[in-house]
Image (cartoon, rainbow, N blue to C red; front, side, top):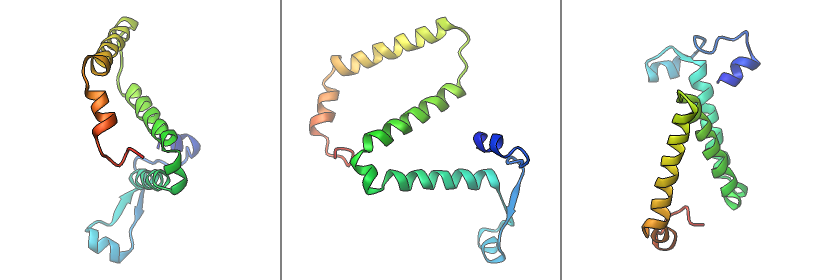
Length: 121
């Protein structure tokens, strides 16, 4: 939605609402829905459809990487590190955590060889 706010500066996505038809309004017990929520819902549904298309299933690692990148960018935008030292300590801790689970235990080999899940295509 922030991208849409930049593309359409005249529309106030935070307060703009769409009126619902009478039949839907009676079923949902609301008269109006916010535009930003509907846009977010539409984008989520679009991403789900793209993720499950046959072409995407052949190259699922590309879509998974794009989703991971997006989650990483949102996470980095949500946290605020006070200094470079804090970030370096955080990364060093994550590195040690990763080394422990990859080389210190057999969890990675068990997951890679014995777990039957739909992600193993």
